[in-house]
Length: 118
Ligand SMILES: Nc1ncnc2c1ncn2[C@@H]1O[C@H](COP(=O)(O)OP(=O)(O)OP(=O)(O)O)[C@@H](O)[C@H]1O
Image 1 (tube, rainbow, N blue to C red):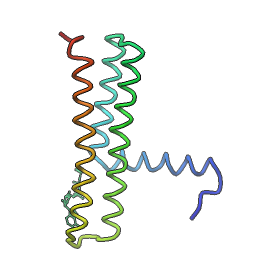
Image 2: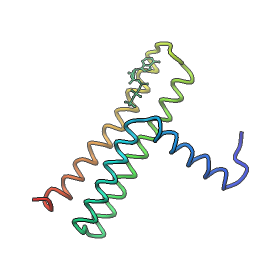
Image 3: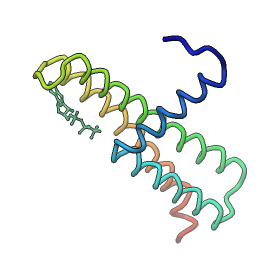
Image 4: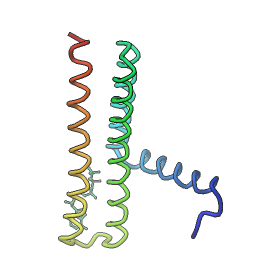
């Protein structure tokens, strides 16, 4: 089924974000960390450059989580409950991508905020 116009295209994309947020604990968790980083940014009055880095990092983590969720759904659609070695690799690698994104975000958060907290 093809999107007939830009509005339905945006609407489906938005529904996808809502679906991932509702069903995936990690999407919720990383969104909370993103909001916390924004609160810290406001509180510590970080610079424009720091805001650019914080916003890019939050987007990077959320995009990784959304892609991981899409891969999980696709694997489940193909395999259902059947064990499959390739399904395992796909899910583990997708989860690995979100872990890398989360670690990078933690390092960036530490570099920006720890000196301000101290
Ligand atoms: N069909 C399958 N065949 C083989 N292994 C699977 C299959 N489905 C899941 N697994 C294994 O179980 C793990 C957990 O899968 P699950 O679908 O529960 O992901 P999840 O707990 O939602 O992951 P995340 O915490 O990243 O959101 C996968 O990383 C994979 O190692």
